[in-house]
Image (tube, rainbow, N blue to C red):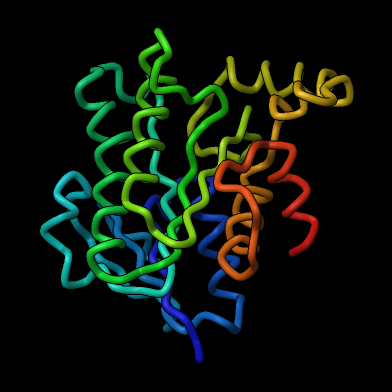
Length: 220
């Protein structure tokens, strides 16, 4: 039976890759996207909901699907105010997980970040860690938390420092083995592929690091 998927963050680097994968996948008949402004993509599979994502709980009746993919995330540069950052990077994914649980959705996949740790002294790592814990507390049967390191993607905005790091990581990646493999860079396309694979297969870990993301992407 064709499935329905929800994507949060469909306008971002990973979310846009994911949207294209699901649109091309015959297993899916409906892709619900919850966005701040229209993506202006004409496709009969897309059901677009233009909303205030910070008030996602108000749209609970529309939040029904077989799977939820949460690719929401901001950056310090985009959102320097820590309270606002927390509302986005903690609030939206956790609210989505709670709605998933309440509405009987048994697959929830969210993008976090390497180094996420609720006990970290670094605000951004601590926020991701707290988000992960709150998501797992919902006890959704198929919960997967992806922890990419540096994400390689084509972006509309210029990120000079990020491009410098991407260039550096190309040289460093071959040297990252064993416990350090989780720090390998990963493309947005590979993250999207790994998410789709996880939604349609059994996997043994909740936490999926960059090296595992790259491995799973090869299966798609």
